[in-house]
Amino acid sequence: MKYNKVLLFGSTGAGKSTTAEKLSVLKGCPLLHVDLVRFNDDFSMNSNERIINTVFDFINNPSWVLDYTPVNENDLFLRELVDESDLTLHFSFSIEDSIKGYYKKYAEMKSGIPPKGLPNCRNAFSEDTLRMLIDANARRIREWPDLKRKLGPLNSKIKIISSYADIDRFIEQF
Image 1 (cartoon, rainbow, N blue to C red):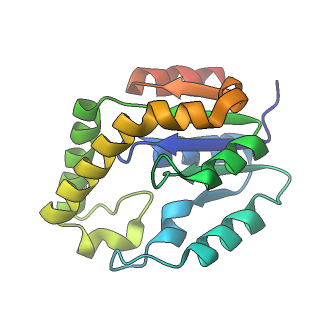
Image 2 (tube, helix red, strand yellow; image 1 turned 90 degrees about the horizontal axis):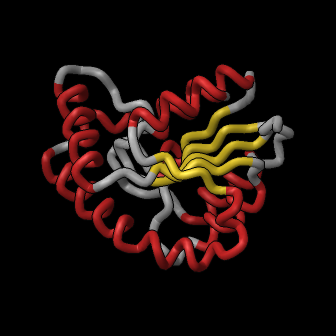
């Protein structure tokens, strides 16, 4: 099956942005990292209206790759994005693997490598930010069963990615 519209969502630090970039190149289609719209350079958030308008303008393209991190289990926007996609990849890593990803990202930024999904936030990323991300991801992992229930029949469009090996296998098959 040809996938024209691919949504990636899930844990921060799980490899969504890297995978999204690879898929965008393989498909030759535009990519949007929603966090680039959601956050300003100082990690302050833009308005929901700006985020929603930007994403809806983007998904009007005939093909796309969208890198998205749900806000919480009540994120109704996610349901619409899953519905619009031909394929949805849920990056559902364990909290331990997510923490490893965060620390890797943190170490890279300390050495001057900007994060893929938030390249302008390098200066605002601190140990406090790291703790906030870990707490937020632990909450998302706990909330996933509720979100899955709310997505109902759309779950059939979702492929679970639960390890870095799953990412590699998926890219090879894509």
